Image (cartoon, rainbow, N blue to C red; front, side):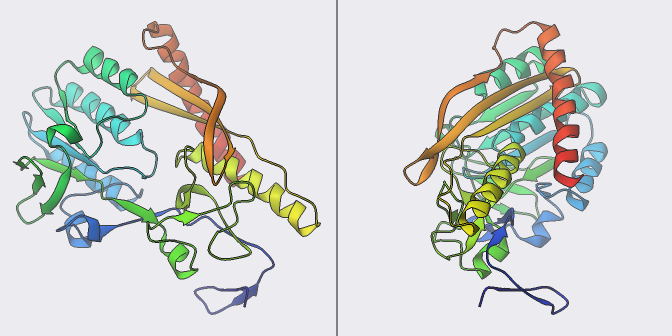
Length: 310
């Protein structure tokens, strides 16, 4: 019926609907993890109460304690972010609780900007951060929040603080609209962002299956603008233009220490593919460049926030 109903019962008709539902957690994919578990083993992957809970746990942890970060396989929201979090937690521990450590339990063997992260960790934090990759048995298979136990393929861990980031899928409204497929994500036409499952619905941001384009704020912003342009052309009876999207990802691993990855994306078949013209920070950059990129990250955040919310 091309109608959206809001929480107060108001019905709004549409010609074209844009969904940007973000993510939800695929809790069935991680036995033992549910809402109750998140109060003991916070994910802090949706900001607010969870973020503050993780902070309180870090503050209460004794020196010589262990913080474990369980990282899911892709697709997931902002793939480099768990590794950025590891660096920032390590900075806090180095400053306040220097005998502590960060343990990364990873469902992936490789990750975005890996060489930059690993060099920064070693340079700034020595052996404080340890990562167990997928091939080393790092994938988390279940949890027991009553005992704060994380179960992996090759062993169990009971850290002082367990930051468990569950597997993810498109936000719930995408499923209600019929726009999510068996993967839990939303397949789209990369030229118009129109759902391949439901006509006249467009999906942008973390929820869509974008191929090579990451689930990031910069990507979502670029998708929103391109989707708006496509809808204008469709409503006017014109052929939509092929979009070329630019995204940039900044990572801060300590105050004044940042690096970035910029890339361009265009439709290739049914998905987005990375095309030439991107750039990443050099691995052996001097401290002055790391400080400059940290400052640029702050300016980027202020700019995209103003651009999005006014």
